[in-house]
Length: 99
Image 1 (tube, rainbow, N blue to C red):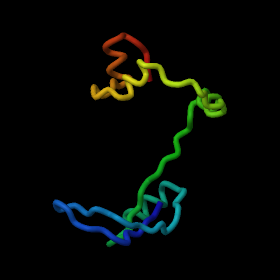
Image 2: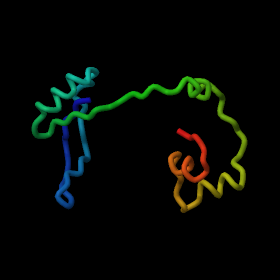
Image 3: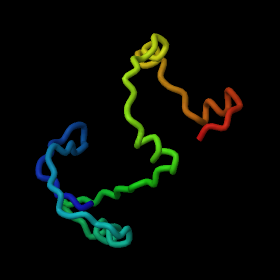
């Protein structure tokens, strides 16, 4: 995707972008790289990837949402300040095979 920065301000030597305009979508990665290398000033190129979902997710996407309220345990987990555990951490700690 090729953008033009319309408005920004500086904070701690960093540009904080507050407004952009989309110039056009670049579908070919090679063309996007060429555009990135040629970009100057307020023109930027951002690589956007569309990931393929596992086939099982398609089935999940087609399910109707349930109206079942969250359990007390689920609410406690959502409100917890303890953070989260990555799949890698869970695999290591619990000897599982999570992605």
